[in-house]
Image (cartoon, rainbow, N blue to C red; front, side, top):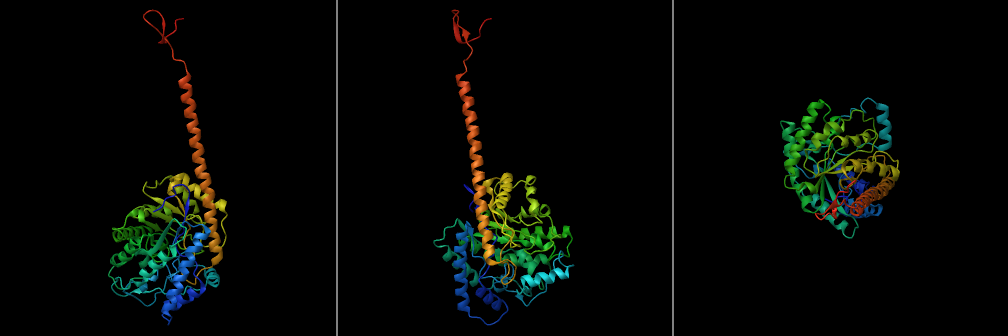
Length: 424
């Protein structure tokens, strides 16, 4: 995994706006409607090629396929794993539950979430590896000739799968998560073997506290989160830590978010996860203040921090100077080489849903790159000047010691030797 060796590198969380024709095909496929399979595959391949080039064009260093083939970052597994069928209802998040007028207004702006949320109704195993192989081939082809530093590919963590697809088969939640982890291991290892950095999406470690697992107390939720991390670590046991990153968030939607569990409470759990890079929200109004947590919590020396310095729930385009300030906060606390500038979440977590304009989304990514360039000039210039000043002081001190006349001593013959003390 690349580090910011001589400048701040840039990346994002994964999903990017899909072309409208592709979105329509994705939704038709997700609804189980007839569709042209070959046309769908060609549309996905073309979209991946275009989105990789567009990321490179706006200055993103570590790119991905934009999740072009997936209807949703957490629901795509229903086409790859056995044991899932039908549709399940989701509980409204705790923070928006009591605001019907707000929910209605947001639905008018974002559209209804049309994505299928299946239920676990049978044993979970890897059923269809073909979509994964296609994703790997598309990204590899799109990277040919692209001027980027590195590529990553996202995958749903075991706990995330269970947070979106409720259990209707296994005797316990623990057994369900462990079965999903065993089934998803093949996907994780295939992504890493292809040479891409594996990003494990784990909103189940934060967002699920006020969404899927809202019936749990805080203590019970953290216990479940710890188990999710144990299952995840077992599923990626054969992948080097420095070939993985882990993403947590509190939900990529505009809302009060006043039921979000604090980062301080989930961070000890997150730090137990094997992936070397931590991709965390740090730009939205509810969590931006948590950057100061890294004053007390020491980032382990083998870890990289990928803070979100762009908010993905608003069409505001962050000023590059603000982006640079956010980056520099983290660099001051964990070291510039261990900071990669990222986004809070994805720009297209579910196909056909969301209020962000696609072109504005890429304008925000361009601002991310510009802000990283500003921060890089400051961070690397600052250290160089400091080192020069220290070197200069050292040289002046050495010169002073070299030119200072040493006290003399008298010789046996009565003459004054080089170290002899003067007599008064």
